Length: 274
Image (cartoon, rainbow, N blue to C red; front, side, top):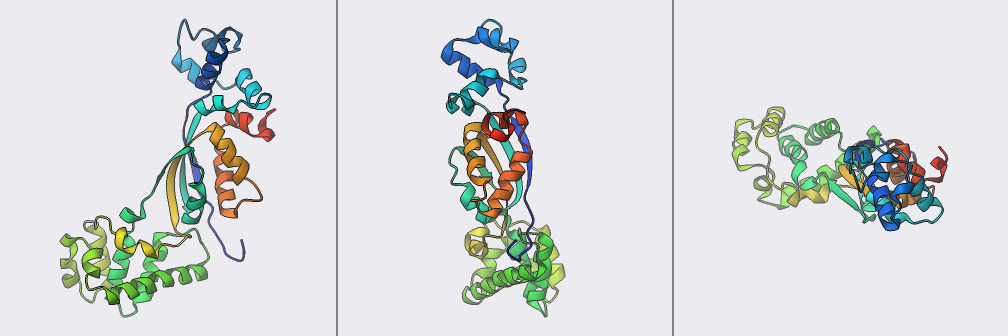
């Protein structure tokens, strides 16, 4: 894409609520339980079988409300949760604009210790950047898969850290847990052993506070998101569209692939009659 090779995100469906609660909600509005084609709904007020309700795969009423009356508030009672791996921080900025979702994102503040360990260890190498480049490539931190472009990306990170290291007399204390500072003396001049020791040692709390500025839009992000299907309809309408940025199109497409058809039938015209 645009002469740069990318990896696409991976998406797994973690949970689905089913359609039963949404139909119960709709039938409550109209007091029309007796008209349901689903026995567990018809009998819900006399004999509430929650397991059976949650197994419902189809609902004529929900389809009618969604496509004929466009009464979408009812389908907010149906939710899906996705595990998303390997999208980008650039996508995250656009994804987060969809406010009606629950979203939990891998924190750079808490999870960038290996990057900082690689930089600290690289100082003990005769060719610091080559050591740093090798370690960061192994960490698979970016949505970019083009090796030449990755070298540019990682060089920028290295240069930012060098800039900070030369100006900040407290750089090492901010980068390394107190219990690991002794490794700097023990493995002085041996970058690989120092890196291995730092990786085994205690991680510096909130290490990203001082170093988060190195992160670019190409940095990989993992997250768990939960949508109600009315909000999911809006997300797919806007993001699985040629007008959307290509990376968020990829994410929307991967999410749609793992979304059960029974939900897509209520929110996507292509699946309406399936």
